[in-house]
Length: 246
Image 1 (cartoon, rainbow, N blue to C red):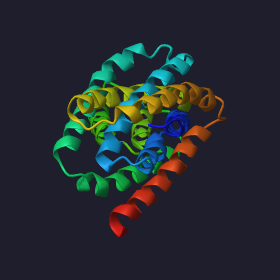
Image 2 (cartoon, rainbow, N blue to C red):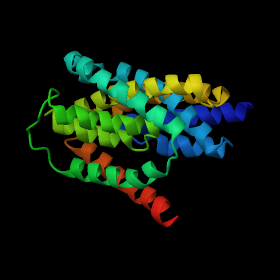
Image 3 (spheres, rainbow, N blue to C red):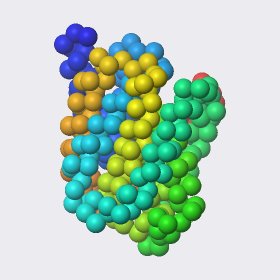
Image 4 (cartoon, one colour):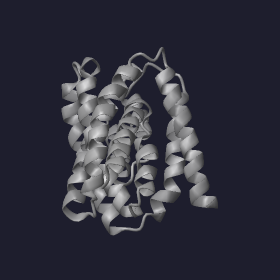
């Protein structure tokens, strides 16, 4: 790759890393960029997933205040997220993507509308079976493609924990990172990863992932929830149009 391509992918990664950690839409930025750099769709998808792992690394480093005291829930929910990511990666490699393309707009739209509701102050906790099943289902999607998957994960965690939005966002970044990490391992072993593109993109994700939480914690009140919800609805409409009318 020429220097211009490397710098372009680095900048894309920084922007996508910030967007990922704040409103959970990294793939909406980075996936089209990889296509624009000439990667085929499957290669762009798996390369994006491998690079996205570094967003979670940066986000974890930048979210230490929000993650304080959450080690036990993360240890309990982490294996569920990892298993979901592995399942999603397997499905991507062995099945056509049409089914997820048709379902994704509805999932994202519903989750976004749920996020837009004022929090009730009640939560089911991480021990509930339904919460873990929902987490598993969402992380399958994260491992498979993941466009706006963080919004789905944000909605699930909102139902499980009565935490402030910034803390839920930090937990979302870690769990999404675990799902991506397991999926990325599978893609690294069996998928067509473009490593020349993945390296500068990953470096950008690392930087953007570290910056993003600093922005998220400064957003007032419930604005983080509403911003994520608005972005999610916009993505659901766009993906729905592409899938049903395109």
